[in-house]
Image 1 (cartoon, rainbow, N blue to C red):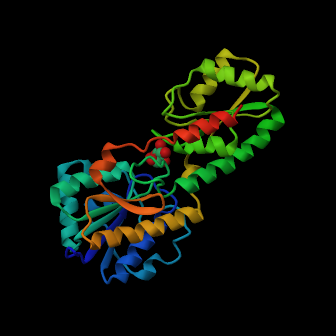
Image 2: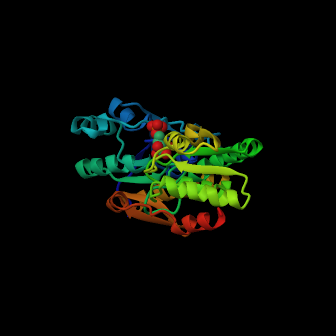
Image 3: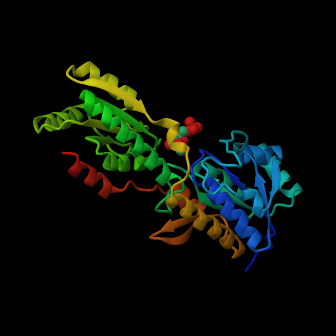
Length: 327
Ligand code: F6P
């Protein structure tokens, strides 16, 4: 049921995520395996608008499977939000004979592609690539596993120095609207408390938690804070804590963009490879306007509408477990 697909454009967009290169490689090689041509669009939607498009071959994607970042570069395009920008992008695709698209990115990428798809009807499939793991329709997004491992490694190191000095550390991890990285880092890093955007917590509750730990001779005090938490980021919290409490020596570490770089883990490489193959095979089987996902270890496809209008609910069991284990 192939829909006259012969020239496929692939691009990465939004925040980069480790494993994006593995996904690009899988898309390119699968397309070539099925005797299709592939073009890389450089710097996401901005490159589409500027006409920065290059032909890719099987060897163009050699030696990238294990590398972080994205060889196609990425951007959060403002111009693509305008009708004129999208028209320019469409004209450039047409000029290069590109008849279908594979986008690797997060919710912003899909929202843009959904509008583009409605306007120009170009067959399109997305692959979820974001460290946040905040997309409905998939158990895991590409990059989440690597980012979480990077953050946990940092937390282990902070624990060494925190314990040596009996200090309280607020450690901020990424996740603008999502506590996935936070809650898993909290469990794996043994945090005394984890603060995530999905949960309300008061300063009093945090004081109480630390007091309880102190009474039972708890020595380490690491608090993991997801950057989008309602009560504030690690800096704000540390300040508020210091104003109200004088018996702790308080420090802050913001792990930040360190979480976005580095070689993808085995898990992210395999996930990206499976999703890349599924994106091309989906396109060639007539699927369009949808995102590839992995649910219970099975490839699934969900429409852009479903993905955009639903949230990836926080893992409530993980939240419960983190509370039990942090006493
Ligand atoms: O969406 C991925 C993400 O890494 C978020 O966790 C973070 O809030 C944001 O991107 C940071 O974006 P930027 O790199 O543009 O500062």
